[in-house]
Image (cartoon, rainbow, N blue to C red; front, side, top):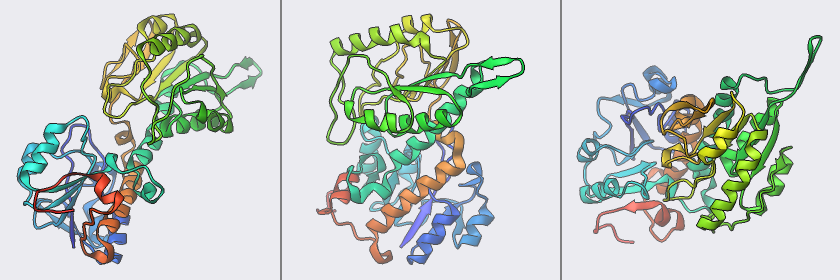
Length: 363
């Protein structure tokens, strides 16, 4: 089987779907890999690295590939260049970009969205949402630490004692837990909140305090928090408005799949925060958890810096790509046991991740 890796064309996307290490692993499984010239350069992987790993360097990733592995959804022009029957996998945004999925379906390709993988034990090695959320949670703390005019750790010096920074993490999923762990390593005093009471033990196991706001929600079968009712959201915002002035840094990570990000931090709460404080909104791509977030930008409102960068994992493209590539390899090996593409739509992973396929591809 031949797998192709294109150079990503989405704005700001620096990651690559397969690293040289991943190419070697696929080659050992009898799978040929073709990499478009410059595909890994933004992540620090040169063409020579891919050649040494056994990849063929090509001018276009659409050339003769049975499977195309990518990070971001393909553009309309990239879809048009695919041969019918080609398998495409990557982050394809099936819930937020139905038009893009329809283009793939009309082209006659078989598309697998990594964000649609079932959250089961067998699929954990393929869980790119979690791997990239880990990177985002780590980077969010560094972004905040670089912006607040305050040291994170407690320092006792001849000039006196510096109190540690106080950090609040909203949402204790993968990104939130990584943010907690990173802020703790930097010496901050960390608190966290999540509407799911079941995560309290995980928060406290990392040395953070669980913030009590009097709002309790439920968890979906996939492990996500269910969206709160408007009344519950209002109570949560009021409670946060009272507590946010206590913190120097607020990192928000709350997402509801396929829906706009829940609003956790109202403008009135930001106005009450101390000058120089920082909010890092990891939900900016879907509108943001903070009312004053400007997606894709860093702004200052009421003397508070609000970081609304989108695609935060791409800011750490090298290691984000390494993790993502391992997820891709695990899925490719599942789709092509023994190096032969075999799409078993009776399999829970294959059926769950498939978001487009031509009619002639039967289950």
